[in-house]
Image 1: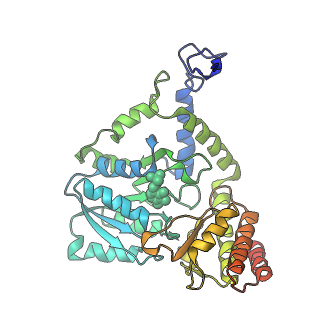
Image 2: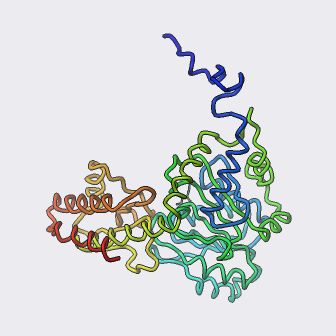
Amino acid sequence: MKVPWTINPYTPFPGVERGFSPYQSKDLSALSASVEEGLQYLFQTKNEVLVFPGRGAGALEGAVVNFFSPQDKVVAGIMGEGGSEWAQIGERFGLQVLRMGSERGEVITAQDVELLLRSEAGKDIKGVFITHNEISTGVVVDIEKLGKVCREHHLLFLVDAINSLGVVNLKTDEWGVDVVVASPKNLITPDPGLCFLSANDKAWKYNTRANCPRYYWDLTRLQKYFHHPIPENPCIPVPFLLILDEAIQLIKKEGLENIFTRHLKLSCMLRRGIEALGLELLVSDEHIASPSVTAIRVKEEVEAEKITSFLKEEGIATLGGETQLQKKIILIEHSGCFCAFDIASIIATLGRALKAQGVAVDLAKSLAQVWEAYDNE
Ligand SMILES: *Cc1c(COP(=O)(O)O)cnc(C)c1O
């Protein structure tokens, strides 16, 4: 078989020096600066936002090892899978992790944390880990109120925004979030590949004292690679940076506020449609319902698996969801480039899936509810 010459990355391309792949041009510093400026817009922060190669969980580990030491006492809020992963990482590195759970489909509130901090168990706590938008149950936490409590108690406040960046409002600086961990999960780019971390001055002070062992996730090393990238041997996957840069331009064009509003509206439409189909929402309180992921609590007569496989055949993917709720919920994600038509087709397909199982549904009424929410919510 003949090999086409263009596959070899070391072949000189027009305008590219020998020894450089087309991605590894000398404009790498400009690219990383542009990406960082875009991420500061998304994070709503003036602080530095670092970009690493890896998946979101890597940046969660980065937050543990760079700001804490073994034996440090922290609170980890656990509302589903996201929170429990962060708690596990802390425990692996020898932190004393106080796991604070909520009922699945409920949230941890500022009052819950305040109560714990005022109790005997809450003495000497150094930091609070919380998930903003819990993907496995579809709940969203009030970060602003939690930020206030953490500030009053002089704690480091760390937020897992992996599932919220670009879909749920997170005012990092205004709400006093010290460390934000995120990934491009909802940024209309391929994922996994990159992860992000922003830290303020208070967090960098913690960093000088923290002595957890770290190598790959050492922020000071990663900072060097990101801010002074070496074109010959970049340490951040350049194709991902190029795509992210493009995606951020599209996001800026729509505008963050507009994106948040769109997600809220789509979530309302979906919720109204689900109710009209006679199905139950896992999260009944609108105030804590995630704008980007919705869980349906499955009744006994309809089997989750049959519905999800029907949806899959029609091209609608569902998520695995929280282990405690396996086969009890159907989890639908509606983030990124979703529009009103997508929501209507999800409701139509759900209705057909129910009908296929002999459940009586009024599909026309359900779709009418969806479009009513589009007009009025
Ligand atoms: C997806 C997700 C993670 C894990 O991210 P990976 O990129 O898969 O490592 C952690 N927390 C939350 C809230 C998530 O949604």
